Image (cartoon, rainbow over all chains, first blue to last red; front, side, top):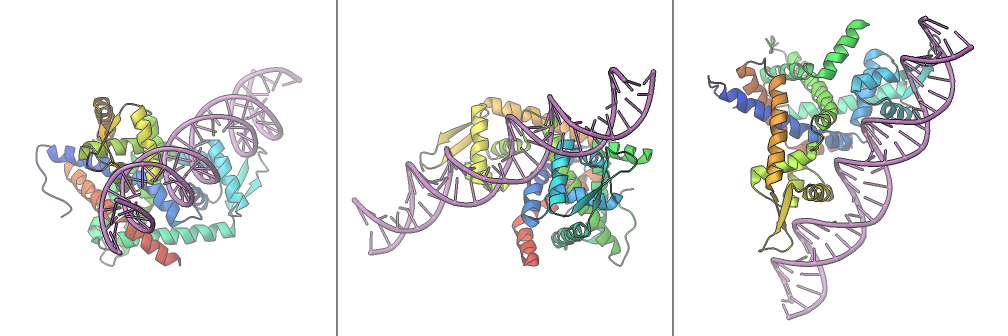
Length: 162
Length: 162
DNA sequence: CACACCAGTTGTCCTGTGCAACCAGGCCGC
DNA sequence: GCGGCCTGGTTGCACAGGACAACTGGTGTG
């Protein structure tokens, strides 16, 4: 049974926080490796970068760095690799010659879609026995949890400023 | 309210799976770096290893590797570092001279407790506005999610990619 | 113009990780 | 009891990801 009895004194809440901590930790530890084995073609970071590019329809390397909370040098190298792989192209901004606006190429979009589909299938497989009600609640909890992260807050602020 | 209306046709379930995928990915991407910044003294892996050692009251390197889904060489090096740092000691098993039973030292236990407390505080802060009922349910969902065997998921993914 | 600032690249370093080769201790069948 | 196989662990090697700092070149402001 997923939702057990709830004590009135807050003990259950403390135990639950403990469990959340442990499980999130375990998950985080494992995720990267699993993702790598699942899609050798696209690392978790690369996937996120492409995803952000698709979502925003092109942006600067600096934006990607901010979004992923990565150093700009890391992003620069990741993007270089993606460009070498032909998944991303960059166009000089005529307004500001410092910036290189990054765009998904068609192969990039296809690769992203393929990996997204494969990830989605894996998640569906893993969650296939869950009642819909639990899925919806779980999704809601995750959104709420991640929304509390400082990086997310900054992102949200950045988005608001545009 | 976190869990919104539930449609009867499964659309909500699909959307929820999508959301879970996105949020888990975002979380995984960020977790390692955040953990590193939070506790420079103990990496996420080292923390998990010490935690498992405490939970089990000593075990073999191979058990740690299996538990964390890590290569034994990785564990060997991590353990070596922890031994150098004085957080872990090993005792030869008198029954089987191949195995080195690992134990937390007192400093190891203290360090683990300190980091656990700090992590716990961060989680409590982050979850402080959640109703107890939601905490308990969220914890249950995470346990259930992580309990789905990763091997199974990988196999399924491999089958799909062939 | 000079100087501060910003986007991006590159050099250097460190950590974490896996794979493969290897060593050493145990177990089994002959 | 002894060679072959299994198993726990260590080490060499390669590589990815990431940070930091130094640098280049474009922008803007006094």
